[in-house]
Image (cartoon, rainbow, N blue to C red; front, side, top):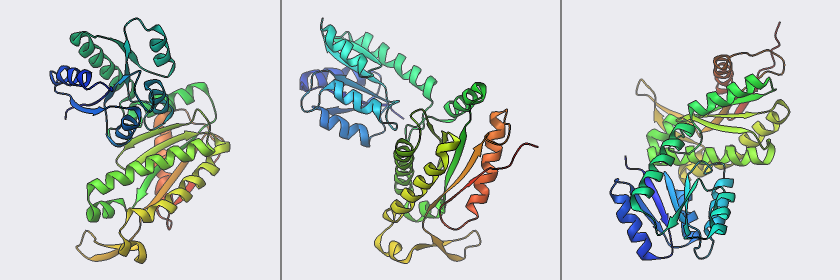
Length: 310
């Protein structure tokens, strides 16, 4: 699948040159002429990289970059800032706002393509992000858990997934299912920003499985907030009829029709508050076990491990 690149510049001629340059490497190109349009595309398309001019109308490049890097769902999106020749303030401003690199106009096409390839390689290696949510994937999750173990800090790891999601996908289709997963990611991010800690971590294992790493003192309020927000949002995933009845009709493995409740979220919480944990694999095993218990309950729920080391 072609990597999607957004070109943001208010000069159509520059956009055309960039499009022509990028077509050599078969990138799929989107265009924006101002900062507002750029942010709209960034928030709705699964982009691989943004080429962003510093001086653009409505919202300037520096502010666009700052907003993207502040958003937990988007902060891993690489941005190359395009700056005017010799304007050192633009370069400094772009890097201060979080730009990953800058290219001076007029640029040499081969150099630009080389820089793009380098940044895409680096991003893929460092992040290994989930393409649907742009949240860090399994490698980053393992690294985060390893770091917490090495630091011997107290942690609470939430393993989350959606209940009745397969039946939802079967009835509404994968596009709607993808939007439910994206909305779940947004709920996790909002809840963590509101009730968690600044250095909490959110990862996307894949499918409808997520991980949030926080601290024992924050985890109860965080889980309650996630559940409340998800339960409030869940009805909006359905059409009016299914919303009113509170279930959908689906067939089980034997082909029998059954009433399936609206999607809910289950959370298993692993903490080293009362027991010693030494391996990342141990965290995963306990998390899967606890999440299994949570899934047996009605509607959204969380279960926290309170067992103590003998």
